[in-house]
Length: 266
Image 1 (cartoon, rainbow, N blue to C red):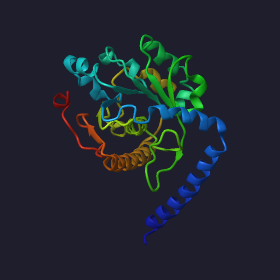
Image 2: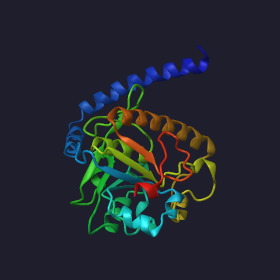
Image 3: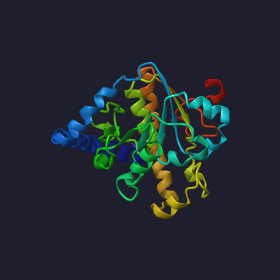
């Protein structure tokens, strides 16, 4: 056994202990258990349907007017700063995921910005239990408690201790699987921010770059290694559940899922 393999084995056992402790932590938190119990109304809510998860990668700007129009008729999951993307102004997402720690910290006003942007038909907000007090009044939400490191399997039950994925698209995928969607399509998931120093979004992200923490290449490579491993675990879960996940993002570096042609799908 190499030293690398030995370290992996030790790490897996440490994470199993961590997972046991995190399960106990949830068991002892009546507040969090009640918040998660509210998620049960979404279990299999969209049984057999299809949905689109829209990231904010530069490729999203390549959508044609006809494609955007067609997407307005689909069930859409949006993430992060999607509400800033002008090309998809006509699309109102049904679900909106905000899972980065910054959203209950330096960027906590984003919850109000999103609900204000879609005032006529606000999406269901998907976020961490730590952000429960930031949800605007009368806005529906799915609150997630994700403290399980996916050593042996990827957990997707939103009413329990969910698996950590470190990526908002991954959390959206687990949510969609829990809701019963059988076809899930990814758009704007370029998955390549570690490859370029230029803008990595389909909107003007200069303000975010100035306000949010900056990271070096070593961080991005480690981060992408972990999130990619988690995507592989999600792909295994999807196959077991009979769920088809297709990446429609042109030139995406995410290889966990088969690719497809958006024009054919629509």
